[in-house]
Image (cartoon, rainbow, N blue to C red; front, side, top):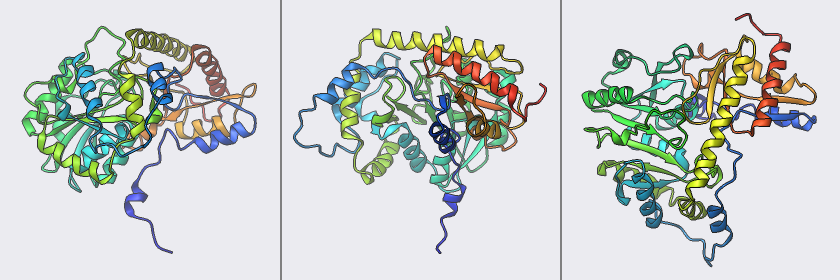
Length: 400
C-alpha cells in the first residue's frame, strides 16, 4: 500500500476540532455539550448580509475575478479608512477566508526551509500552513503569569539567522486575547526593519478591543510599508464564518503579483460569500455596538467565573473573544477528552480546546485550556458550574 506524505504526517491535528468525535458520541448518549472550544459566534449575522443572500437576482453563478470583486475591494477601502489604514483597492486581494490569506502569504514569501518567528501560544493553523509551505516556525514563548505580553527583543534576536524571513503576530490575539501595546508594536517594527523581514499580521479581531488602549495595526507602522502583510476576515465581526471571505492586504506590488498566481490557480474566491460580505459592510453602527457590548459582558462573566473556581486562573483578555486559563489538572488533553467521554453532571458537560495544541513545545500548555466566550451569558454561567464539577471529579486533579 502506498505511503502518505511526510508533510501529511507532520501536519498537526486541530486542537480545536480533534475532539469533535468525542463530542458527537456524548450527544448521541443524550449529553448536552457546552461548546467553549471554537470561535463560532452565536450572535446573528447582519440582516443586510442575509437579505443580500435571499435576494440574489443572478441567473448565472459565475466565477469572480481571482482577486475578488472590485466593488467589494473598493468598499473595503472605506472600511479600513475608519481605522486610519490608508489603502487602494489594488492593495486588497479577496481570499477564501483568512486561512487562505495566511497560506498564500506563506507560499509567496517563504521557500522550503525558511523560518518565521511566532509568539506562542499561537493559533494552531499557523503551524499547519507553515508545514504546507515547507517552512519552519520558531517560537518565542509568552507566559500566563505575565499576561502573555510580548517577550524581550533579545529573545527574538536569538532566533534570527540566515533562514529567517518573517515574524507573525495575531493582534488582538487568538488564543490569549492579548492586545499588543504601541511600545511592543514599535519593537516588532524595529526588528522587521533591522533584519528586512516580512511582518505577517492577523488582525481579524480589531472590532473587539476592551481596554482604553488604542488598536495599533501593522499598517500604522512607519518605515516597513513594503514588509507588511495584513490578514483579515469578515468571519468574526459579522458572524459570517461560513461564507469564507477573507483578505490579504499589502502595499508590496511584487508580493501581490506573486499571491495572484496562487489566486489564479484556485480560480476565484466564493461568489456568494462576496455578495454577503459586501452587503454586510453597510451594517449600521448600532449592530457593531450591540455586538461589542455583548462580548464585553460575556468576557466579564467568564473571567469572573473562572477565577472563582478553586485552582483556576485566567488573566483578563483585552481583545478577541478567547482566554487561556490554567487549571489544576495533570494534562489538558486528557482532561478535555475525559470531560466528553467519561464525565457528565445532570446530563451536561463542557468542550474546551487543550492549550497544548497552541504551542510548538510539547511540554507547554499541559495544564491550560483555551475557552471561547461565544455563548450567551446564561450558558456561560452553566458551563462554568459544570467545569467546576468536572474539576472536582477529575482523577488527574493536582494541588495548585
